[in-house]
Length: 172
Image 1 (cartoon, rainbow, N blue to C red):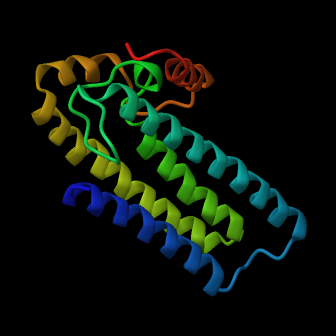
Image 2 (cartoon, one colour; image 1 turned 120 degrees about the vertical axis):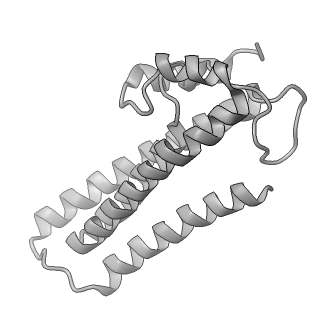
């Protein structure tokens, strides 16, 4: 596992932990049980969506992002533009943001939602300002063309469907 990957992994794990702990240990001003259960249900939905995005993105990169079969988690050797990547540039990071917001909703604590919002803001900044630049250096003009054709993120159910279809097909 590369140092850059370890740093990113550490960022997400620590942000989710801080969100959860802020929801648990900071007093909660919401005491209406109907609001709490609604927030918990929404949190479960967002966590599920985030995990689905992460799983599809990771499996797509593993299947199509390497010239040779790799074991473990490795940075892609080639630009992936099919499946879920045919719709958006950063599905895994988008899923990780939803995961954090979902954790905050599970705590049904307004302060945890604020913390999740700040982490989401910093994550979006990192993705769009830093990670895109690194990827552009890695893949050059191909990535510039890719960026011009795809949004960084989208909620489209069609995008999830494209991701599942690409994973079911044989390696292209």
